[in-house]
Image 1 (cartoon, rainbow, N blue to C red):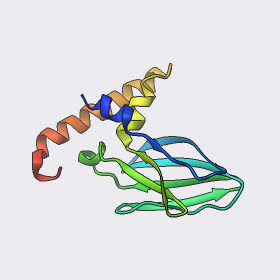
Image 2: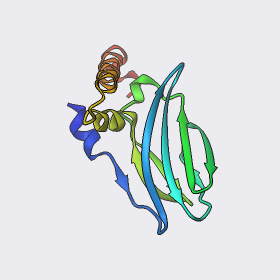
Image 3: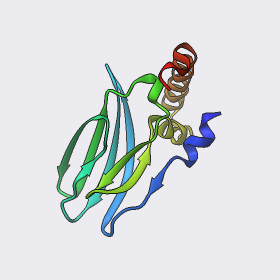
Length: 129
């Protein structure tokens, strides 16, 4: 099962003074992964190969990776802080971590997302992976 890979999928190597504070997944008209950081100094957040948007307010910085295709929900996305690899995460990493909450609606949502990913993987097969 993918969950074992998702659990191991987080890579954290933060520059001094930068903290990775969390992640969210948005499932509106597109799937987006948002990663949150905190720093006293201004930082630059980047990742390759995705539509992204960055914002900051005070000490909080966020990068939103948009338009993640369902068959790529397991694909690790590496975010760089000031040009250096810092965090590797995927939407399914979020799903794995969300299953440990007491929020039954969230747990059911991430399980449904995982099943949707499995159906897409079966439908598309090796054509997109």
